[in-house]
Image (cartoon, rainbow, N blue to C red; front, side, top):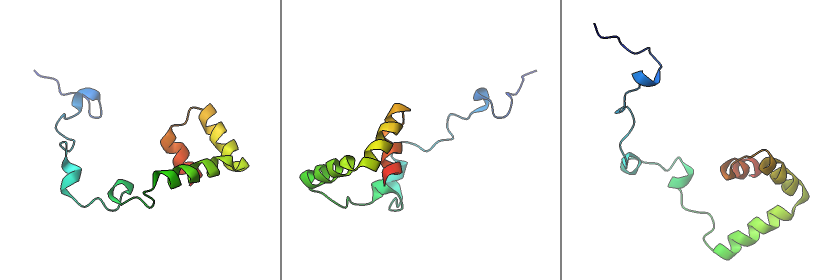
Length: 81
């Protein structure tokens, strides 16, 4: 008699339940950030804005706190926007 894996366990996970590679390229993804064109395309202007924001004491302090606790760059970016 074959035992069925417990629901929710790793053994019960269907390896074919995720979308295939490239699936996101076949549907409208404009609701996501990566589906939108960049607001600023000049690398020098973007770098200058980033440096200026880091120089602000409150942002600098918050960024240092987040880096100390090991937050990812993505989390820091979302937190400072």
